View 1 (cartoon, helix red, strand yellow):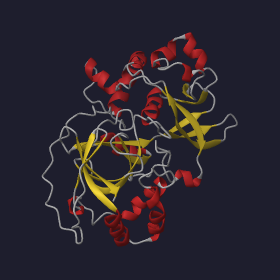
View 2 (tube, rainbow, N blue to C red; view 1 turned 45 degrees about the vertical axis):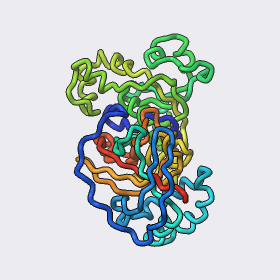
View 3 (cartoon, rainbow, N blue to C red; view 1 turned 90 degrees about the vertical axis):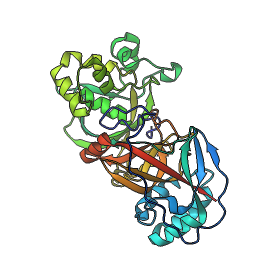
View 4 (cartoon, rainbow, N blue to C red; view 1 turned 180 degrees about the horizontal axis):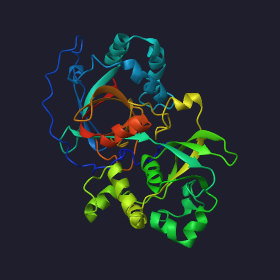
Length: 373
């Protein structure tokens, strides 16, 4: 959450269904031949919900233009906890961290084989969304303004699966007793608390009882294992709003304070956190993803872990109204809503700009895994 099991991809808008068809895109330009890439191609492989189709390096759009050194930081992170397929390559990855882009590219072509990822049903195009790390103001103790709690995992959560729903946690005496004393801090807006739970992790500036402040990370620790339901979709189905963005949802909540709990309870899923210190080094990276390594803004993605193993370098291509991406990324996280072979959630970083990008990102996606030869 780590962001293990986050609802990555919800960003600041409700997450679309994983099987939603992406918008049409312009045809890809013809591939440009890459010198030396003439060896016989290996066989097609099946991995989870996907089929890996071997291709030439020339098929990867923009491969010659990416600033690979940016992705190398994420790759070095993956080498802190490499999967069995990549462990033997990590000493070379570390040595190449000071190499030129040309050296890094040449090494990739020598040591890795690109495979186009397709669903078993055939389509090679899927959906890209984004997620980020919110930044919230909080108080260590409840105040008249900040009274919405963020919790550690409740007592006895492992003995009851699934645990209580969000509504039950707010209303049942047994659930309330289990949560008592588990409060980490308090925020002002229940929708901010929901955002933190949807993203799975966040930075929080906590005001202590003595008035001092410190920034910490609240990282995913557990969930109640209830299904995720989009509050935006609930409002749309109610005919309450037409704009299901977070600004639209917050505007409705401000106008309908008596129905906020009803809206929140439409999503039974809850996430619980653990508090982590945020050193200067930690602050330069995101939270730990499901692989167990810190995420790198713009270079880490959440994937369906059964279709793309953690730590796999992936070539990502996505063109749409929000951004155009052709770059090397690392599969370092997952999420309960990230389902399907050609499905990814792009970690945009932290703060308002990252939240804006994550919230608007929803466009066609193509993926190529780069697997050891």
